[in-house]
Amino acid sequence: MNNVSIEKIIAAIEQGKVRGFDEIKEVEGERFFFQYALKKKNGLYNTYIFHIMEKKIEIIEDYGEEEIKEFINISDALNYFKSLGINVQKFSSIKGVLPF
Image (cartoon, rainbow, N blue to C red; front, side):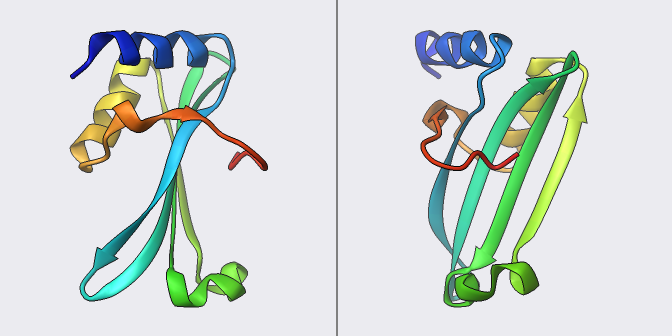
C-alpha cells in the first residue's frame, strides 16, 4: 500500500472532507454500480456503501441498497473497506452530489 496516498486520504477525512469512489463490478453475471465513501462526523468515521444492478439504475429508489456504518477510529473504518476487498487507495474527492 502506498502510505503517501493513504496519508493524504486520512488528512482530508480528518479535515471533514468526504472521500470515496465508484466502480462497475460484475457479480454473478450481472453488472452492478458500486459507490463507496468515508467521512468523519461528530468524532466518528462513517462508511458508506451503495450498490445497484446497472440495468435497474433508472429505478434507484426501488433497487438501490445502501449501508452506513460508524467506527470510532479511522483505522477500523479503512480496515472494514479492505475486508470487503475495496481498494481504499482509489479514494479521492467526490464530484457532484455527495453520497451522505
